[in-house]
Length: 314
Image (cartoon, rainbow, N blue to C red; front, top):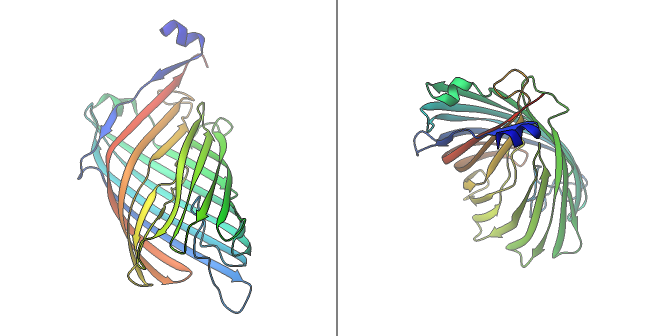
């Protein structure tokens, strides 16, 4: 088997699984969104249903809008199977511009950057390998929302992304893909539909289904498709309770996957790192006005997996 792998010029090494309990897997996130809108007409008005597919601000009923959002997340120390420990600081910033032809049609352009700073400690074998430290990711997306009529809406999101450790080759870190789906507006309270995403990742590819939903269960409680951060894959689900226009509370969950190119000097030169997890978050949001808000979130990860693949013969 080793000889066969050597002929293919790469060998696969699987990292340890990081098992977190409720305390050691705690997350803390600070999230800020600022929206600047130039809308046609005497007042700024927004569509009832936001774009459920990808990043972006609430879409105005017509005209141009720009936005910027950012945040920082800290994952507290967690134990790994081999005696290692790790924590992560994640930072991200994202901005973009949207143009709404009318309340049901819009085209956007979004650019995002994220950095994940890993800190491995302890005496385990994974820590001694010192697998990676700072991982940088960028994403350029062009979400399109096209309403055919009052019931049917199509979504299409082409995207180009990069994900790499500091010092890794940029050209070896670029990948792309897209998302497509549609929704049907059953009534004023429920919009639902299927979607599918495909990413040609670094030396890998993935296809994943997505549920697009905007369900106003009551006047204050909404179940909707949630969004990811930085270059992670695929939306999740979010339950939001907004008792008034100022405060809202939410619980959300999603599958996180970050696959990235390693640098030339580590234990796996020009190899691939892989971080997969399923976080659950509780959040509170304060809306200063229609154009600015800040959120605080905390949560936990029940289990997180690290893998890395090593190239041979380079």
